[in-house]
Image 1 (cartoon, rainbow, N blue to C red):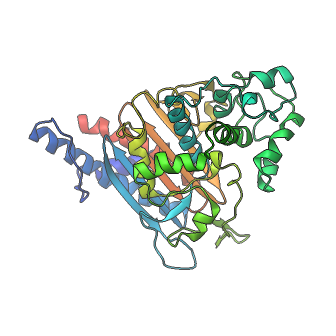
Image 2 (image 1 turned 180 degrees about the horizontal axis):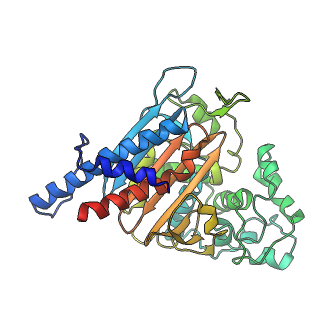
Image 3 (image 1 turned 120 degrees about the vertical axis):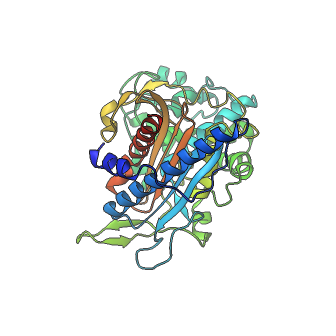
Length: 394
């Protein structure tokens, strides 16, 4: 992480903050006041660091949410929805979130397991008989947990061109048998949107209800995610949405059209949401909504299942000692803390999310363009928070 970030932090220690933070119950008034002041100071100088980096990145627009314990402590939009207008991004502006969708799918599967409708060890061929890999024996051994951990043995991004061409899952799944396997199930990690999305077919076969309907009813509606959806039509009907952007040959930003690619693999990349929606999602992930996700239902999906490509993937992070993949989530040991995170990129939208389960803090970033800061936004936030915690205790 660049040391310049921390110079800004040190200069800004002690500033006040106008954000209202709901103190925790059961702590004496003096301790409440101390914790509130500590969080307000952190938010003040973090916002300065955030604004500096967003400006330096040149990204046309972004939105950020921070949740600590059981409270949303920061929620804000930056920049514009469309570089050709002055219409600002607010907390209800909708973005595509790409592969952050995988986290919703994994949580939904954990709920279906809790209901007794599915098991992590269920064989894929029992639900999808036309699923076939090059190795017949390996095909028969593939379980739901292998789909959601990208450990079927297929290489990274197999047949991704078929997703972009708009083929249906029913058309794509039989073609997986053409692809050479790179390893045994549960032992080889190969990030895969098609195989991950086979869970859509399994859920509909088993429950007679689509994954989209399950997530809408059991997560979006119950969590109060008012603008979240899982279809191209829903996004296009949304009046308050951000447009995606890319650089042209002159390195100037230009607006791109919103396309319908990857909604065919909605389990892996089909969610649309605002930052206000994602703040509610962070509350769920931090265990604050047992009415939606019962205690223990996050444990399995947040447990490392297979080693990641390697810590070099996190070259913008300082202090990753272990990197693995659970079910729909990357699971790291970062500076001594367990951090569960994921990134997303689709249609020139970028998104990042992370929760530190030990410090009970979570953050989400939504961007309307690919930019350098997106890759380091999460470690920059965590480094800032850890630095502040360290300095505040001295």
